[in-house]
Length: 191
Image 1 (cartoon, rainbow, N blue to C red):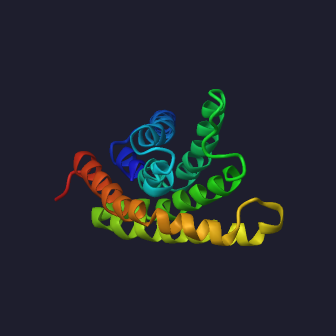
Image 2: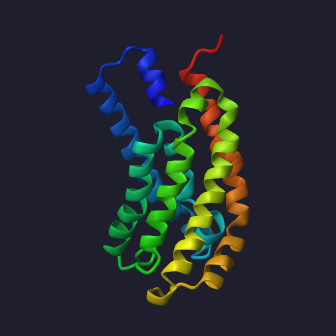
C-alpha cells in the first residue's frame, strides 16, 4: 500500500527506500516493545495468548508488501531475542526462535501479497490478515511436525499454543485491518 501511495505522489526511489526503511524499523521496534508490555500486564502466558509480535508484522505486510514485510517478519523475533537475551530473559525462547521467524515470515509474505489490492480497496485488509494468520499458524505446525525429531517442540505442544492464542488471533484479525483502513484513509484520497 505504501508503495502505491509513494508512486502516486511521484516520490523518488531513494526517498521511497528511506520511508520504507523507517516504517520497517518502527514496526520492528513495536514488535519488540509490544510483547514486553503484554508480559508486564498479563504475565509470561500473555505472549502465547495475545500474540503481540504478530500485530506489527501483519501491519508491515499489508503496508509494505511482501518484500519489506518479510524483512519485518524475520527481524522482529531476532531483534527481540537479542535484546531480551541481554537481560537474561530471551523472548522468544531459543528453541522457538527459528519456528517463530519462519511463521512471521509467512504472516508477512501472505499479508504482503494483498498490499496492492488493499491500496485499491481498503476492505481487502480483513481477508488479507485472516488468510495470513491461518497460513502462518499452519506453517508453524507443519514446520514443528517436520523438525520434531530435532526440536524440543512437539505438534501437540504447538497445537495447545495455537488454541491458547486463538483469542489473540481473533483480536488481531479485527485490529490490524482497522489500523490499515485508518492509514488508508489518511494516505489515499478516495473519489
